[in-house]
Image (cartoon, rainbow, N blue to C red; front, top):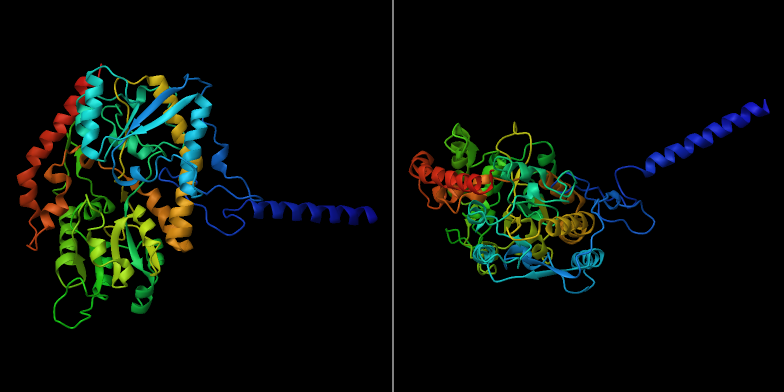
Length: 499
């Protein structure tokens, strides 16, 4: 009898341990913070503090062989554009999490491979193509990597044969979680990949910021739950925006001193509405080349929806944009900090600016086309990594893989945790929304290789004036030059890279 009781006690003890172990191995950290994902769909939990379970990212081996490059410079040329200015390089530790993670990445790679990561810039986005092409023509290995704009110089560097095929670079392992597989598929030409994206490149899509206090006062419902339920569409955004506009000073007109449902500008930011609705500028046609893909009922319906949002009623403030002077832009004209806008479009990285505001805000993905669309899709506006033709493939492969792996393990979680969670989003629900945004990262070949063709900015070109939109005539006028540009890029790549 005593033996039977002992066995029962032992059984209860073992079961209690197992239950405790399962509980501790759940999907949240000890403080209840949700796990997050990167643009590659991988777990993006920030590195854990003392006493918590180690971040699983840290256990992923990069499998780079032991190499010593004898103190060589690994020179990265980059433009003074967007996030390259603030988030990619750090000369010292300053006690700020993202900066210090970037600094650690550089120092660890320098020490491990006996190299000197050497970032240089020659100016704005238009400098990359002439600098790289000049070096290649001279047979110089001045640059081991070029960071580009998302459009400028991309078609010329690739079709001109000035960069290497990433698929032929040794040591680079695209099966690793730090490489963006969606981008690799979208940007390949006949299996040739001339521009790549790893976690070294920080994903920066456009998103919708909203004023949480105004949303509550207007009683428009739980916006986060709308996203979860698949009901966050452009029609829904338009409906809600119309409830928010007010002529605050009663002068009978709407200007920058009034209240709006949406603040935006008709330019690159609104273009992301296409891809958010699963509409892409081009598709591979019967000819084997990318061809215009916009002459569809779906695109026409989107144009009409956006026209209604922008011009029918007073719900939208359409501001200006000055790329050379970000302080003079639409968001500064009716800023979120004024408390006079319900929704505003801006890049995800703009949250760094928003976190200084007293207004409590949330973050949402761009809306879907309709409730039948399965996923929320976010067009990536970040730049690319390219390898100059004269660079040593093994050298580039080793350091590129190391930069990607270290970014996956340290800098992406730091960016996510510091910029997007504790200092920007200010609430768990927005962190969940950012997960959705990252998971839905997409690229559009025609946008990046279109060489500023009219069809790479169709929404702007069709809707920039308050006239009844005629997208069919616009497409008929411009599709010929667009298709020629796509054929030029494809022919150049095939000529320079196919054996």
